Image 1 (spheres, helix red, strand yellow):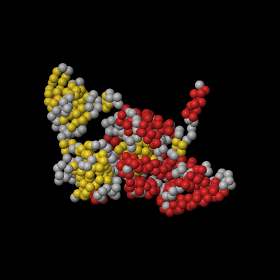
Image 2 (cartoon, one colour):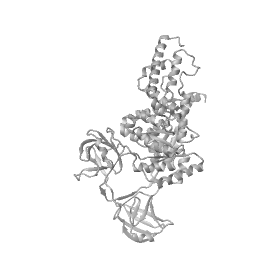
Image 3 (cartoon, helix red, strand yellow):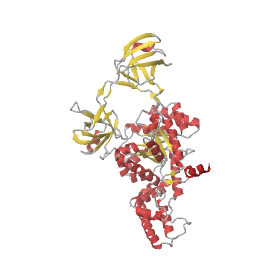
Image 4 (cartoon, helix red, strand yellow):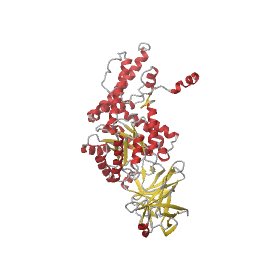
Length: 602
């Protein structure tokens, strides 16, 4: 066959030889980075260099020529670049293809083994019925009951993610204890990952307004109540979910009493009282409850009216701002404006605003609000809203803000990061390093983990910024200095930073680079989001979940129907694994292929 078209084959051979020289030159140029990798990752570092050498050039025409000859088109060589190029050279040169390849580089089988070994080191033993792991995000500690944990474990969860941006170590510890105990009873391995809050910038609204108590019931998609709205009855409200009633009532309340509460719109809600063993009074309602200070409230026991009063003062809350296209707002240190009618947002790190230029974009609340910097204003910037997800958007305090066109530099772990990292090293199996922008971010946490000398403790580098993409090769080489280590495609913040139109392209490329350095990848953000909140999927989400199985782990966010989403995701992954591994289609038997014959024979 090699002799059939000698001139064409010789031309192909020369092109492939030129490609081999390019990838070898890249590995030589990156020898220092390769040698800095851990010995167990050195082959992976070398392959990463080869892949970088390959992808710095457009080889589309060569791919088409190779495919036309029935040869490897290099389209699935991410994990074994030089080995694939070497085999092509041997075939095109007429050498026996049964002999070992000319260079010692990972072959397809070895590359797959490296990837699976690194996945097990980071995520734990492989699930028995699939190779893709499922990571679930922990809810609030009050919701993370044994029943919740049993639902997660039985549905197929393999890892628990603690979001270090919410609650605190005592709450995290309770969630971890419940989850680990349930996994131990079920005799299944389960690991815990703590995400550092990271330098995610948030804006605060400092202006206050009268508080409004709103406690929601938990309901099914069909509308029926699954769990009532729960409130704690107190003399003075200091926290969310506390309803202040006349203090004289509290020692006299009994389980079964009823409080009739007037809503702001005039409707009434019946709250059933329960007094626990410690003497604390609570109330529940089968409908969602709203309350404002001064609202009438009546206390009844059976047919007797025992008292009438009003709701006590509620804690003031941050004012909620309603924004529309064309509206202007300030971002500065004080959260105040000289114009009382102008919205001002306070930024905790206002020194970063010095790097933001006029004309650059400002993204607020994960893309729900898009603005552009209109002018500089003393200690901050004035921004004009250019796009919203709907005609008007209500902005609440504490929402994220991003400057995708600006070059901001955050160089140290914050207080919350330090607290989450300390907890992770004490009680978890890995830490998620948020907002990795460069090598310094990898080393900042990596060296702390190494100094802790905790065998098997892992790092997951979250790739979610434009800067991370710009410095991706350096970040990956730095990652290979640690073990175990993996990557996360944090698609929410990544979409905000690079633009939603580029997300599909970027998540695809990050999967390829993860495979090139044999590191496991976590596919994250809004997977089966509708299912977690309503119990019902959308067609787009099912397709997204099917794509997610090309990663080594898929992450689910929290919601009342997490177990439903978990079970559905596990089922989708199991089905898709029979059809595809990474970019490779697998040709298992298809029932559809014999459907017509089966109908005829019946």
